[in-house]
Image (cartoon, rainbow, N blue to C red; front, top):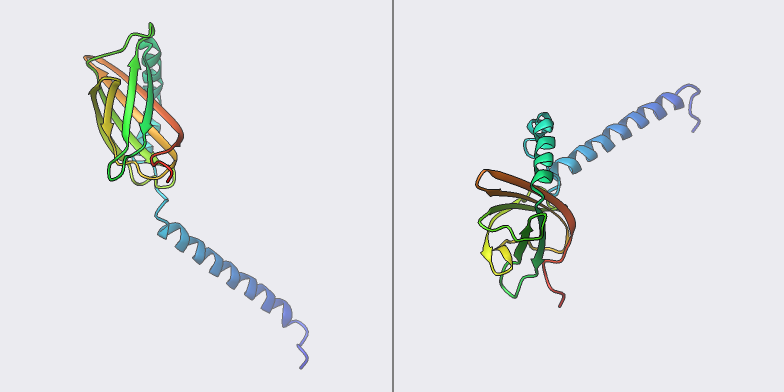
Length: 163
């Protein structure tokens, strides 16, 4: 069977267009059914509040506070413990503060965990259901009287002990 001249190119173009539509439909399906995909909550309002964020960063520097944290891996059947220490610029522990924390894994950005850290011997701590070793982002807001200090950190965290 011989193909007529002039029929092959329109068929190739139609096939390429049909393939493109199928690939795009598959990409839309993957993007809308992926559980790990999430958008930063209130991203537009946060973008508009850029000046306030810069002012808060200056206020953080003025306070001179430093927040360090660790996540103690979970014991069997328990949640990991988020421990934080807060010191001023002289290295003296800051007491009487309220520390609110948000944590999310980069794998599951849509699952934001929250905790209020209470005073402990080491500083402040709270159990938080962080399960799954990997890259986590933690955001802290510390308030004491009229002072507000914020801190963010992204790091690899082991929330479970190896077996």
